[in-house]
Image 1: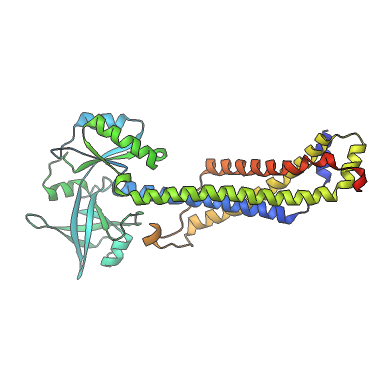
Image 2: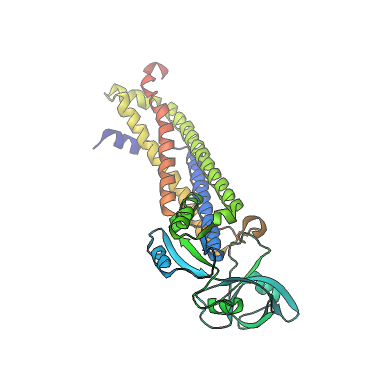
Length: 366
């Protein structure tokens, strides 16, 4: 049996403050990563719902080449390509009127059926299966009576003043006088891993060049939201660094106290023939165990909190400022594992500093 492992198992690390600081740091790190990932997931989902990452517009018509669509669908970076029709309207329910933007939705197959958001339903006092009258104003006013098929959660919209409703594409094509197969644009939705600003800004001009269509990206439509997400990225990195430093220095202070209390043990081990490297290895083993204990406690507490928040949404936010009505949580196992490995390595590197001084302890200090 390894002597350093045996001795480390007999030594007791009694600094609850150091273990507690590591646990708190791990809790904050996991929570920060999960919240950032949650914001990104919900906002990217909202952007994808209302306009997609890249919209392609034909220069002179509403017709799109089928061969180009087929080529786009084979592109491994693209999740889906859908024709889209958008049309402003006024919805009426009883005496209530509200301006809305109608957007085509391929999941609606019934004619004259629509989906409305929860906020729009509250404004119009509308319920599922209610009939709403829509007024489309153009050269001639067109009136349609729509049945509310479903009431959906508000997407993480960029402009909270713009209410949205979703209808079948054939209904909107008839309202705009478009033929079957014609549309306002092609909405190109990218794979989840490519929804960040850098990927979108790189892919959009490539698609424009390959298709000959005009491309407008979501980063060009909503630059402020991507700026805000980048600020959140920077904040999480800063939090990760600070929490690693806090956990590391608290663990170092705890081990300095342990080393001072174990002076007689260290001298005895030296007298028995253990060199400073072996003794340092003993204390590093103890540091690893204590750090892992703190990380496990912090991770377990953070995961429990995240699961409760994800299921209940008990922490609410102002959607006018944060684009979502609750604190979003998304558990990214890869990011959490990498953050824990980084935190563990940082703490152990800091703890290794005092263990290198063990060789200077002499029996004269007893």
